[in-house]
Amino acid sequence: MLRIGMLTSGGDCQALNATMRGVVKGLFNNVKDLEVYGFMNGYKGLIYGDYRMLTAHDFSGILTRGGTILGSSRQPFKLMREPDANGLDKVEAMKQNYHKLRLDCLVILGGNGTQKTANLLREEGLNVLHLPKTIDNDIYGTDMTFGFYSAVNIATEAIDCIHTTASSHNRVFIVEVMGHKVGWLTLYAGIASGADIILLPEIPYDIKKIAEAINRRKANGSEFTILAVAEGAVSKEIAALPKKEMKKKMAEITQKYPSVSYKIAEEIKEATGMDIRVTVPGHTQRGGSPCPYDRVLSTRLGSAAAGLILNGEYGYMVGIVDNKVKKVPLGDVAGKLKAVDPKCQEVREAKRIGISFGD
Ligand code: F6P
Image 1 (cartoon, protein in one colour):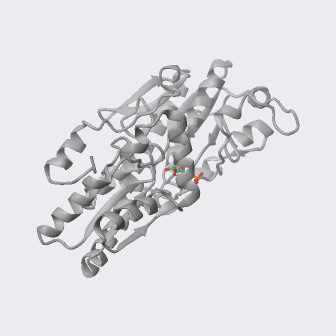
Image 2 (cartoon, rainbow, N blue to C red; image 1 turned 60 degrees about the vertical axis):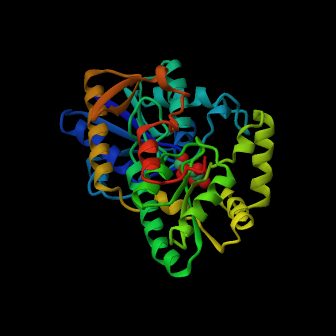
């Protein structure tokens, strides 16, 4: 008898169900006696013993369904070692529930924070496998995370729609793209949609350079400009501050503006006098069906995780490097972030064709 547990944790994304389907189909097709337990709402379900037994039927027809059939929640890693409001030791509770169900392995789908807790559980002696989910594509040790390309599609479409209206009105448009502390999503959606200016957290912007790029376009006969701005974009001045002061400044911005794009809009208005509009697609970027690329990636990663379980190999993230599925020791990657290298090929190629990064 093989018993596995599964949970999805952190912000959701489009291909969570597709990935779980890959794991479970890979097992049901190869194991006679299999029990699959789904923990509800991320680590919360594992802590408080909220789970249900799943059948093959639960995984049928979910390849294309966004969200997660298990629900998700954010359980910050830094609070895992702290008792809950009733004094419950969360780590001990997770271990007890794992052992109570006599699980052979826990398959954990999630982003960076989720991965850190998965590694903690590994250090505590549980058999775990991590599958890298996030629209941010910021997980170290894998070229790609599932969810990323689906979100790129949505952010690209948002900017495409802005293009026609921007050209009719001779305005500057900012489209704010998710991505947390990194700029992958903005970089890819910005290039895919032909944005004129792309602002990333990894390349702090100089408002004078942005104004120059807008004015240069005007001088060349283009009366409108489109900016793809990462939600974590930061100015050169703020990026140069010591960490503590930088955090304080960022907090001030959050208090004063709905988001960083509104601050940038104000600065551009001051510098150019142009009419500006801000669009924030927000959580639409995590919604809807996974794109075909993500369906393939998720199926491959899920199936590969099943392969590891069948071999009794645990303690890995199942990632993809150079289009080859790769098992990466969790201890080597947990806690590391994959940010955009300002000198990477994508940025250099974009700059060559005239896209400004405001630097
Ligand atoms: O990590 C995925 C993500 O969508 C980020 O891009 C974004 O910063 C964050 O989650 C939003 O989190 P929440 O859904 O908790 O508002």
